[in-house]
Image (cartoon, rainbow, N blue to C red; front, side):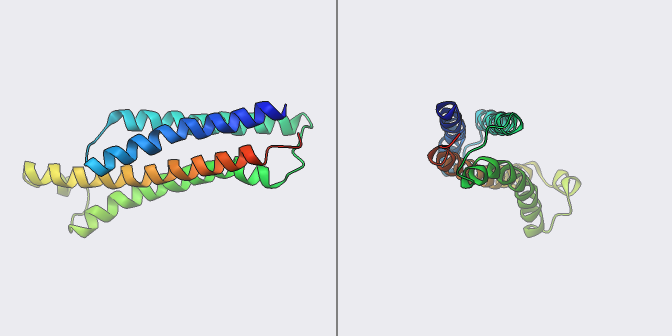
Length: 150
C-alpha cells in the first residue's frame, strides 16, 4: 500500500506541475489561456481524489506512522480554497486601484479600457493560481517523502 500512496502523491504533484509551469509561462508572456484553467482544475481534482483515497485508507484502519504525512497530504485542499479566495480578492483589488465599483463600472468604460481592465484582472488571477499550484506541487512531493509506514 505504501507504493500506491507514494505514486498517488507523485501523480498529484505532476497534475499540478503542469498548470504551475504552463501558467507561469503564460503569465510571464501576458497571454491568456483557457488551457491553463482546464489544467488547473484537473490538478485540483487530482488533489481531491488523493484526499478521498487517504480518507478511505484511514477509515479502513490503515494509517501512516508518520503523522507529518497527513499535514502534507491534506494541506493542498486548504491551499486551493484559500487561493480561490485570493483570486476573487485580487480581481477586486484591480477594480479598486482604478476606482471602479464593479462589473457595471467596467462595462461603462470605452472598449479599449475594458480590455485593459479585464486583461489585468485575468493576469492577476492567473498569477495567484500559478502560485497555489506550485505550493501544491511542493506539498505533494513532501507527502510522497513522508508516505512510509502504511
